[in-house]
Length: 98
Picture (tube, rainbow, N blue to C red):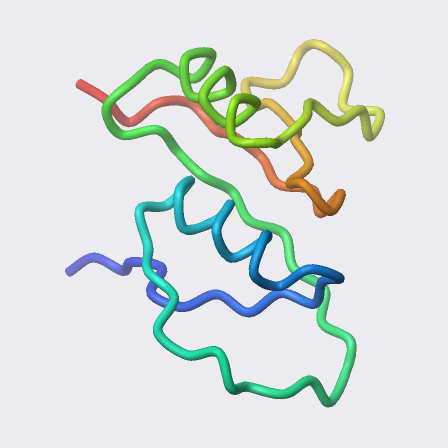
């Protein structure tokens, strides 16, 4: 049995722009725009490329508006720390491509 990320809620300044970014990254579609905000949420995602190498995916994400982020991770990790267009950090892990 496998688990799959199916929903995503993020506190942000420009919900439409951020939703468009993450929908492109994850090949998702926005299904509900009516949920209100009660408390501040913190969220960190890790994504694993499934049909490309890690650096190819990093380049694609930069093209979509992400940036590399330095959070003191050093150069020895096997992941890339990035930030989405509003500065929310996420990591690109090693590829799952065969």
